[in-house]
Amino acid sequence: MNAAGFTYLACLDVCGSGTERPTWANISQQFGAWLLPYLALISQLPFGSRHRADNLMSAILTVGSPVLAGYSMILTILNARWISRRFENLSFPNTGDAVRILISLQQTPLRITNEDSLLSSLVVLPENDDWWPAVAEFLNYNHTWSIASATAIAWVIVAYLLTVASSLSDVNSNINSNGQGTGSVWLWLIPIDIGWLQLSPKCDYARIRRAMDNVDAMSFVTTRDGIVKASDLSERRAVSIDTSMENLSSPDEDLTPPVYNYARAIPWSRSAEDVLDAFRMASNNVKVHKPVKMGDIWKNASKRNVIEPCNRSGNPSEVDAYCRLPGYAVRTPWASGMFYRMFVASLLPLVLQWATTGSAVLVVYFTPTVVSI
Image (cartoon, rainbow, N blue to C red; front, side):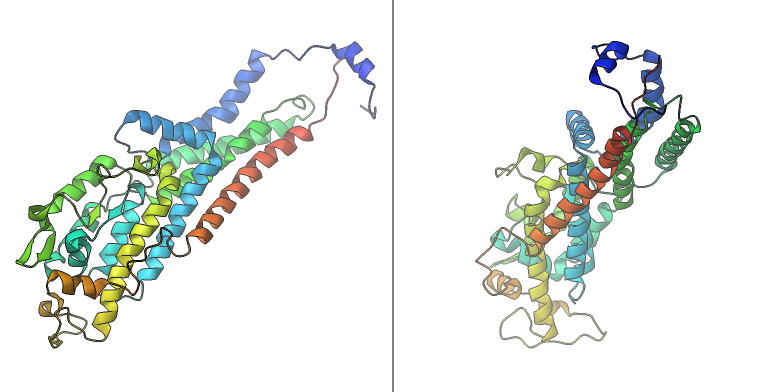
């Protein structure tokens, strides 16, 4: 034990030139004590894809790429925070429900269109005041904390602490291989699980599809002949998750498990900002008491912070003008602040990954080599 080192020839003479033969007792002990508890946490990850194979692939992708899983989670948080703050100062009906809907649809390939005045009608017309809260209510379901998820996470934490304490109780007998490196590598899965449970992403495709279908009859659009149901005009909708009529930028964009949010972040942010721009322009017009119909005079309501329905009615060109921002035709594919959010979302998962992996490397590196004679 007092030796500072020995020669390579002495090492070959004592230990031999071959690799150390693993023992099943050591492997099974480390597998059961350090790895199995983490595998149980995989069942707590959010899934919800329309195909089971995609759910399986999302679990494999999360385990195989912790940085990607963390990137999607942090980007989801930053996007939700960004759109919530942008809507804070708007004073127009349904802005609160619009934020809830946009945040809930981060796990879907969100598409926004103003063809045939669909978006501007959905924002401006008083006939659509029932559409926004109805969609928000249909999407108001939680995949969050339960007794099973809390128990699984507590089991992993307690198992990790007990095995660390056990391995340190007799260092000399366990100095060659005690499994602490394996346990440290998998620690990243705990914050990923806790983060998704706290966020409660809306990723059940069947439920989201049903919610959007249930409100089809509640959407109205203005035409030159008057106000009609959007379903009578065409199959297109102002807010849609249907991508059958266009090519996706990536096949992963159509998969609802939130680990794939990295593929939806850019188009979702652009779509969310389109809705924001429409509400912001309408809110600015309301602040200066400008009605939708040109030439009309603003009519004040008997109650404060209430807009008379007659101030929000007009033909398609008037409704479009009410929601159009200056330079709206020049449409950039990048939402404001997107590069900054992507940078932050890339940095934090790297810190998480190398904090756990780095700990495992240090444990193995500083484990001394001993010779049993």
